[in-house]
Image (tube, rainbow, N blue to C red; front, side):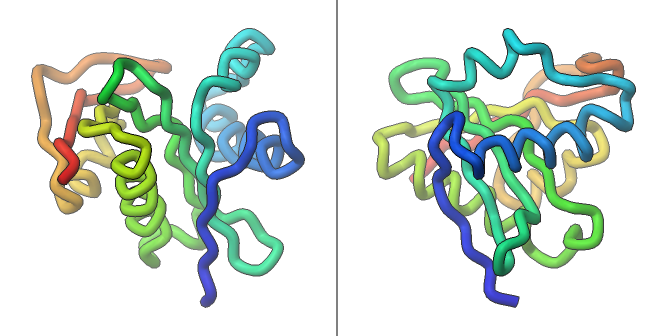
Length: 145
């Protein structure tokens, strides 16, 4: 498997592929979809995608929160590629990308089912569980070095 990970411009064909993947994996199973308003504000975000050949198999979004803090969100990997290092590669790429842009901290709202994944990557849980998009989440963070 030759995995290619790259930053994708907002509103490009690759961006819309990523929106479709995020919708299928993260939203549709919960009976949710994106609103035009939610997608319209993503122009300020960084969009990272993972491909094998021509196939988009994973993606994530980095949203600037402050001068040195990014929120990682909408991390999605096609089910048939989960457990094969794609998510880890995406997160590691995002961390390096963030550092290169001068960010020092990543924060995220992890689904309860993904907390152990982020713990293995060096993230820390903060606070109590909370509900977001109808399911339990945890606030997590990592200082980048």
